[in-house]
Image (tube, rainbow, N blue to C red; front, side):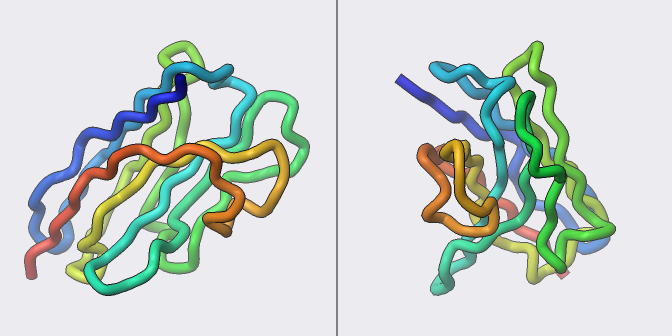
Length: 127
């Protein structure tokens, strides 16, 4: 049974930083592409960042335009954990952030390529 458990969300002032973590179990973590999506109230879930895996030739990491230069995705295969370091946070970054694991094929930018989701962690950025 695959489980993705996020942590690290919270309330932060604009310009601040947060680091999200996602602990994975029940899958061969090192060989699975991992990513982060977010969903703000009343909006669709959108891509944030993704990172490749051992044996994946597709390059990466990948970032949405709003995440480039501010967010960094990384992974620790020894700990089965993927991270999202978020700097220079803005009020518009307020959302629930979801960890994801990907199928073996498909674009990382699309929710249809995700096979498992975490439960989400809330990030609130105050102005």
